[in-house]
Every structure is written in C-alpha cells, then in structure tokens.
Image 1 (cartoon, rainbow, N blue to C red):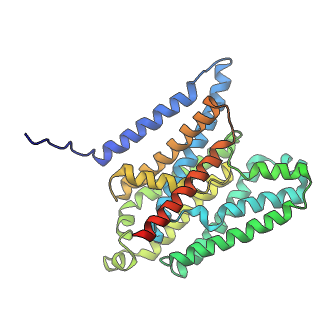
Image 2 (cartoon, rainbow, N blue to C red):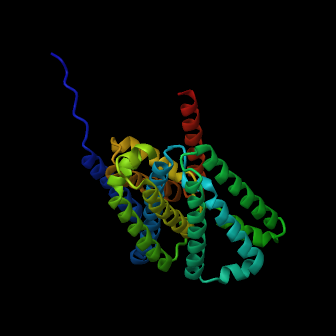
Image 3 (cartoon, rainbow, N blue to C red):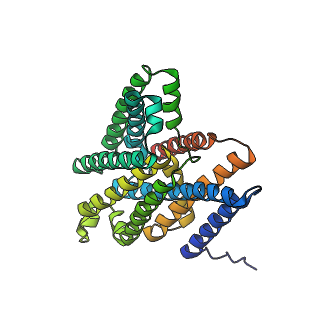
Length: 323
C-alpha cells in the first residue's frame, strides 16, 4: 500500500505557527524566574521585550523589501554603510561634547536627531543607487562597502584621539544594546515601525510583480520606479529607527529574511514580509533570553548574530557562485 504524503502547511497556518512561537517565547521571557518586586521587573522586561520585537520585525521586513527592489537575496540594508554612519555619529558626539556631555544629552532628543540624520542619509543613498541602476548588484555592494569603510576609517581616526574613558563610551555604543531603551523613544519607534510595516503590507501585491524584474514588471503595467522609491523610503525609515533605538545589528536582517523565505513556503510578500518579521523578532527574543537569563551574559547576542549572519552571507555568496 503506497504511503500518502502529508499535505504541506498553508501559508496562513505557517504564520499562525510563527506567531504562536513568538508569543510563547515572549511569555517565557517575561515570567521566567520572576521574583521580588514583580511590577517593577515586569515593566523593565516588557520594555526590553518590545524593543526586541520591534527591531527584529522591522529589520527582517526591511531586508525583504530591499532584496526585492535590488533583485538580489545577498543584500541587506546594513551593508550600505548605515551602521558605519551611526558609529561615526556617536564618535563625533563624544569627541565634540566629551564623555560627560554625551551622557547628559537627553535620550529622546538624541534619538530624534539620530533617526532624522540616518533616515536622510539612507534615503539619499538609496535614491542614488536606484537612479544609477538598482539592478547593478556589484555597484550597489561596492558603493555601500566603500562608504562604510570611509566612515569607519574616520571614526577610528577620531577614536584614537579620545581619552580612554571617552573611548569606552564610544565602544559601548558600537554594539546593539537592549538593556536601556528610553520608553519615550520606544513609543515613537513603535509608531514609525508599525506604520511602515502596514504600508509595506499594502504594497505587497505590487511587490509580487516587482519581484519578477523591472522589465517584466513594467511590461505588466507596474510603475516599477515609483514603487521602488516608495519601498526604499520604507527601508530607510525602518533601518534608521531600529539603529537609532538600539544600535547596529548588520546581518540580523539577512538571517531573518532567509529564514522567513524558508518558513513562508511562498514568494507572496503578503506572507513573506510577516514571516521575515516574525523570524527576526523570534531570533532576538530567544537569543536575548538564552544569553541574559540562562547564561548570565549581556553583550554576546549582537556579536553572535553578526557572526552567524556573516557566515550565512558567505554561504549565500559561495552557493550563488557555484550555481
């Protein structure tokens, strides 16, 4: 008697399963070994959990949008120099104001200024890349890498002239941290990121057509260039807000997008975008829980995400080259 294969899960069921997994991880994160003043501890954990979910979801969705517009799955928005600009900005602030002056800056005002600057820089860079040919992957990667190297070089030059105490302040800002997220900035980031995600979901049918390639999409009547500009502006907003909120996590989006594509089981952006967002959020929540609660570590998560993201990038490059 021939065996019958089980039918594959429908995309909607896959999204519900991912949502249930994220909900379970969130409950464990909130209530694991809850002792002492429960109200105060829950408030701190809830703020940290919200930052993890927002940054993970926004980074995953932004990477899918960027890859769709660029027509290449090897790219991530962080590779075009936004993280390097953030590090250069932190270094310039410490060099200008000193360690004490930097610490006395209002967190909410600094968040607004950094978000505005990163958004404008990302929008200008993406617009330049699109105008000169968004399909030219080599030029896009080289432009981003060169800008990133330039900004990191300027930042390192400035860091060499800092006092050891001031350099320690800059070094702490160079890695993503979810330990101290200002509540006011978190609410504003939530509004921007949720709004950008909602707009991306509205554009998902057009993104399905854009994924066929610019000539095919234009032949089907899609205003591809206008859609690409709109998608890149959403990417700029998501990446800028996420980076200004917690710091740079360059390769998280690459991991979330790759995992989302596997779990979604479809090329439809209405499923792929939330799958990548849920995957990114689950990665951060699970990783932060393991390193913070089980292992008692605090700064290892960002480094580990960058390590595995870099390995995944190399694997994708080698796989593309061998194919």
